[in-house]
Every structure is written in C-alpha cells, then in structure tokens.
Image 1 (cartoon, rainbow, N blue to C red):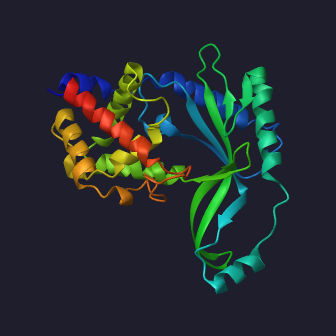
Image 2: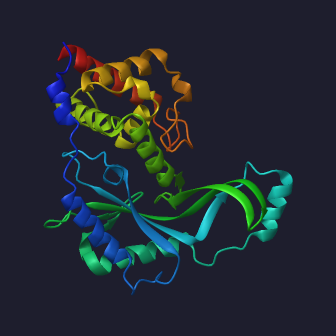
Length: 297
C-alpha cells in the first residue's frame, strides 16, 4: 500500500525556527562577548546541523553551534609533493595558543553567561535548556587545511574545514561549510525537493525508533542528508510518494554504495570504523527498516 502522500507531506514540514534562532543568538552573544580570553583574535561563530541546513523537524530541539578560531590551524599535508612538504616545513610557525587552552577559554565564556547549565561532553560543550532556551551543543574548533599545493604562504591550494579534539584526544575533522553549500545547491537543482525529503526520512526514522524497530542513534541526520545528496536530481519531483520510491529504488538497486559520498564531498558516506562516515551495517538497517515500514503501512 505504501505511506500516503498526505502523511509524507506532513513529515516534510520544517520544524519551528523561532526558538532555535533565539537560542543561537543568545549563545553567539555569549561567545562574542568582549571580555573573553580570545577577544581580539580572528574567529567566527556559526550554526551547523539541522537548523543551519533548514532540515530540522518538530521533534528536534538541540541547536548546534561552532566557534571556529582562524588564527591557529591544523593541517593535512599527506597529498603534497616532497618539494611542497619541504616548503611547508620551512614556512611553518608553531602556535603558542594551544587547543586545550582555547577550549577552556570557550567554556569560561559560556559559564559567564550560563553558569552551571554548561557541561563538557566527549565532543561538544553542552548548554542545557532553560526556560525558553533550547539545549545547545557548542563545538570549539580551529581551522583545518587539507593541502593540495604549497609553494609558499601566498601560493597554496587547500580545502578548509574545521577540527577539534574529543575528550579522549582524538582529532576530528569535518567540513560544515562545504556540507551546507552542497546541500543548498542540490536542493535547488532538485527543484527544492531535497530538504523536504530529508525531513520526511528523519520523521520516518522517528517513527521507526518509537515503534522499536530501529535502534536510537544509528541513523544520524547528517548521514540521512548525505544519503539523499547522492540520489540523482531526476529521481525527485511530482510527489513525495514518487520521490520516496524513486530514491529508495535507486539506492538499493542502482547505486554503487562503495562510491556514495558525504554531502561535503570530502569523505565516503559508507565506511567502516571512521568517525566521518556511516557504518555500512547501520545504514543498511535504516534503509531496510524504512522500506519495510513503507511496505507494511
């Protein structure tokens, strides 16, 4: 029978943005206060995640915020030629402002404004919900550069991302700017079907979790966005029913899943044991559960 168009259309709706916008502006104001230890340095604050990409649904509440320091950067030079690596080493100047100190300064800035509502987690700094403020997860990040060419400070080519360190000391690299820009471009190219279809799948995921047929946490929104990012534009359109059927059929019968990419186009989407990729078994569990729900509706 399939899920009715009317249900899919309801699931496609964007969640409330007023409260999340207020929360973001409150956190941003705290991070940009003039009395912070990093005031005067080159940094920027921005949204990432579902609210930043307009794929949020009503069931979501967390607001994801990044503060990116640009005065200090980490880099990947593995793709450079031996000559370029030598040039990079000659030009490299060690930073005196360490990541650990920077993160402590960010935590202190949040504590000035939010007090005991601030808790440090494994990756993010959490600011608890309070009154009309939603919960916010803040990432203290530094600029990251994946170099492709380096002849000198003003003669280089690199992809810019962000990096931060988990509580266990693991360096995590991602590319939120590319992710957001690519999603928006794909959304426009698909005649504005992409983001509503992401919201459909996220609400469908919520239904599967509520029914006990899908484990919590195995289908993050970031990877659902990446999954649909790979679906050809012509598979979207005319109706939510057709878009769902076409997308799922393409994923299951036509796609080379080993070549699917994340929306940032910097990593493969399905990869084992990498924090930047979706575990193949988890992805398959979500896709198969979604198809079963459709068939059994």
